[in-house]
Image (cartoon, rainbow, N blue to C red):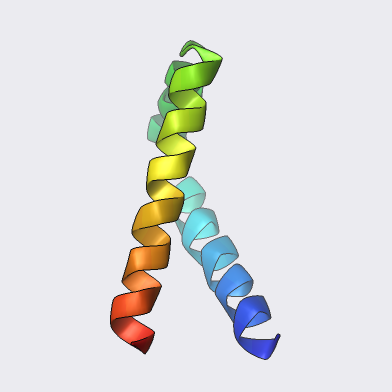
Length: 61
């Protein structure tokens, strides 16, 4: 559980840094995502999740 919480905190740090350093680019990215069909957003999320699981498997393996 401690590792899960640490990973969530790291995700918040990375996202916060992106918004702090590139606010306009993040706005453009969000507006582009909002314009995509729901199925495409869902597919991108699933691909990202699979890549994350595979990455964890390699690192923690």
